[in-house]
Image 1: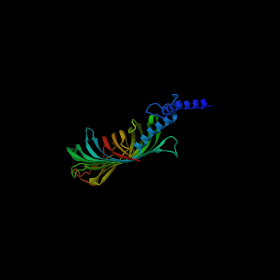
Image 2: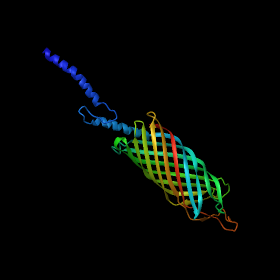
Image 3: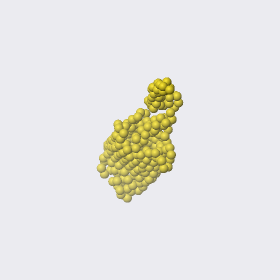
Image 4: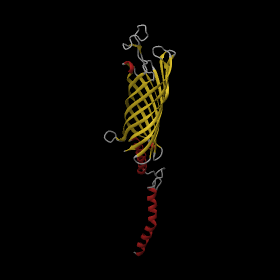
Length: 315
């Protein structure tokens, strides 16, 4: 009997290190394939690793943010065949937003719910090269422009491999441009362009490290209820519908679990549709020959490129 107990004791002493090594092998994850002692993949640890990567995307998309940025604008207006107005230059401003990406337990089993609201304001002096509205003579001036853009989104996030997430969304919003050319008293130098936005897009989030998430977004929007107001003659015109395309890329870096920094670059292009000439009672004799002025808004195209950077609080 003493030999039996001694044999069991020795077996236990030899087996303990083996058991410890087996447990260590089952619970070690170095970022690569997760395997158990017999070489098979461990589904529990693989699920934990995927869940960690998904949580990085959710942290990057669930925040309150504020930042600063710079935007370059190129604008061309076809006033008549062979002529037109052009503007280009930089404007500076800020951005603020709130977004949420959370598991949709009550509605969806495996997908996430996504919502976001963004506010962008930018102002600067653009170089204006155009002509006087009545005489048609060329003129160079400065547009003290102010741009405002508000956009809300709602979508569904679909988790992919390696923690990536694909988010199709619908979007709506509002944009405006206060065009204030420094030619006081001249017709058409103080205008306000406004339009509603409605459409959708697709967003892809990619966690590349435990702290860095890259993102890319493509949007297609329609401009509706467009309007241009000639502020200095108290007259406005409705604009026809048109389209807007927008692309953006960005990166989010988690300094800590709550404090993040981010950077984005975006490009967008849109047209303001024109309208038919309308007689103005404000200037019944604008040419000195008893003829009333006809105001109209020609077709124009705008391209803007901007970069932004800021901080975010992830909750």
